[in-house]
Image: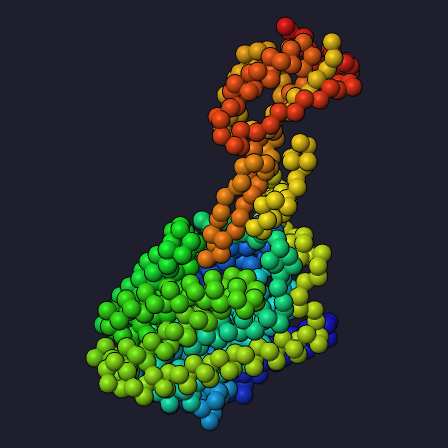
Length: 466
Length: 119
């Protein structure tokens, strides 16, 4: 273990030290005109997307039990730091460096060599650095989304190593395939802001880890309730807000396309909130707040790949169906199959992302974005097939890649916390802190006496008196 | 005179009224605890992402009173009058006889540990 860390540290140091030396003779990119409006918009969008990851920390944090809140929040917050550095050192170049056989970016931007104030190409109107930092925030939030699947039971060191390797060998190459001029881009797969790259990769990888780690201790017998839903709603609101940067910012300019993406994003989020709440209301008799927050996120996920390719009206349909599909994924499919995707990373991001990627093949229109293609409903049925290939490729990489990473790091370190740790909570055992002052109501020991759907079998200190 | 402990488990919203009623009959002290319990009252259903969860332990308050001068019957009558709504979930009252009591500050034992010296 110690050896592993020192080797990792040494590699990092070498990368930093040697990158400028090895690549100093690269020719600078041809200068092009910088548009100040576009630049301002993309930089602000990058800041908005940055805020999504702490927002996600709250979204997830509110849904776990009191004893694990910090561990979940820490995972997201730590990723902001970890991937920000990874991206600057080698992540960016693997995604956006000079294409190698359509599979991965070359090392010409290693350590951001040659990435400066000039635009990256003659068609770009923003500094290369602005594009890089905007993309960095996407690389950050994607692994953070996965944490919802393994919440409350993964060891922190294993999480760090997994995240670093996953970002490097799964996210970076697939981002290259779709956005960096790789083979999916050549094929014509449309993914405006990350339905495949961000949501399918994270959601499906989450499912794989949830299956490999196994269920949380007491899953199915013990009641596991969200400890603070207002926190979850706060997180969902921050996500919704940040998503304007995510989707509208993906136009990479302050222009009509950005406005279109902004409107479709808001519309789909709203439509999915409505459809999730109404579906749950009809199904269980109550319009729930957690349903509203989950529906909003499901709609945002579903519109992500389509935001800059579809008109506002189709975004209503994408949102409405997105809310319903994701609701059934988390309430039916999860219960039927029986995996413990703790916070529904797969049910919302994997399923919603898949629906969004396919819906892009249905509703895309060249009238909205001349750089895109028409979808099935605009006379181009092939696009749906191409989107399908994009979906399959992302699923396959996520499944195989995540499986291998977990297997390999499982040889070197423990991935799942032990039983005792799980009972006492990861906040204290992994981080040595507690989220809340010990208190009868919030400090959940008393809640552990509550049993699941067995009204008659409960005995408590209170009833044993009688 | 014997020392008696009376334990009243009832609805949280009745606590203030009960406290005032006990004060009115010269019960000098009490200990209140938040508790969860179940009995004839069946609890309720909660829904999280389409999953129904039965919560069958309902929040109650437990009021513990130790008396010697005040008649037990008077306390029971008062508690019943205040806490009764007529629906399931009104709670239970338990009566125990105690062996001894100690006032920690003075070291007094027995009845004098319970009786309010001012009255």
